[in-house]
Image (cartoon, rainbow, N blue to C red; front, top):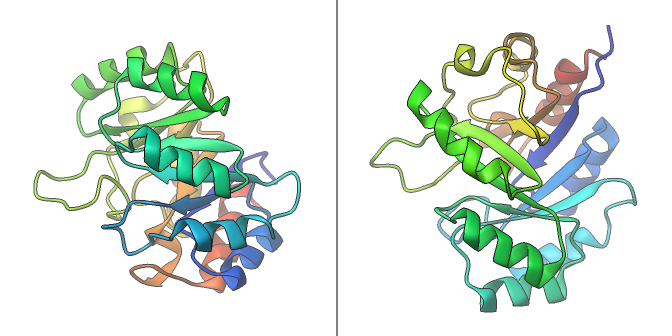
Length: 215
């Protein structure tokens, strides 16, 4: 049975995989500007990719504790539909960014235990969307994209006042079960559709979107 699930493919680095994500039916495409990530792109790379994205597919910039100068460079060069903040940005900082750039903001929040859920409330008062992700381990170099899942039962049946997206360890094999357990209407994947870190796989992209949407 087909489900109205919105899929975000994050960490795209070349046009071939942008095209594959669009053909598969992804609704969001993410461009990663965190230099430590194997999925990172330059502002120039992202600009060249973003102009090829058809209308109706949201272009999202992922940043980590970026300052205004960095966000200025990105937003001035890349035609974007949303900013995704994946660092320790406070609710006040999110409000500043929304006011400065006039773009919707998605805030990523890492979850490991039930106590982490309380952090979501403060962000939901200011962010346009929330990305509910797996909290990285203490020794991780990346705030996301680590291929780790959290216990989806922690958020089963919860309802929040803004749209939210499920992330963390999702693959073509488990995304349908994750949707069933959490009730997620939106899902995000990066490492789960890669053949190696930072290397997207067209077949995995197609399989992931099909598994998420039930097609």
